[in-house]
Image (cartoon, rainbow, N blue to C red; front, side):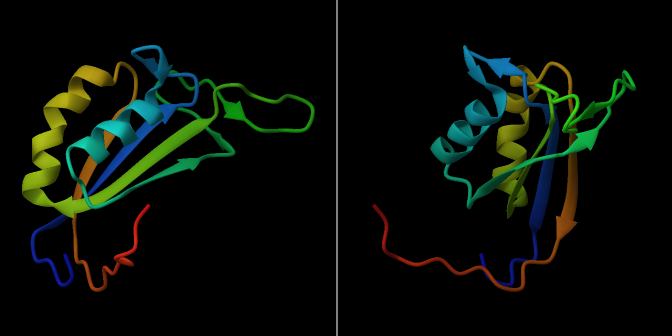
Length: 114
C-alpha cells in the first residue's frame, strides 16, 4: 500500500462498555476487519471525553470510569474501507464514524508472521 493514491482513514469513536455479540465492540470490529483483510487497525483508549449526550467519561484517581472513550483507526484503500461500512452500520449503536482521504507515504511490514 506504499504511495497509495486512494487511501482512506476510517476513525470510529465508541465507548469502552459498548458490546456486540457478547464481546466488547472494539474487539468485534478488530476481528471483523482482520477477517475482511484490511491492512491494519489500532484501538486507542482515551483518558477523558464526552459524546452527544455530554456525559463526561474520565479516568481520574477519585472516580474511575468504566466507560472510557475508545477510538479505532484503520487505513486502507478506499474500496476496502467502503466495503466494511455497511457492516459497521449494523454493529455500532451509539458512536461516530468518520472517513477522510490520507496520503500513505510509507507502509512496511515484516514478512515473518506467527
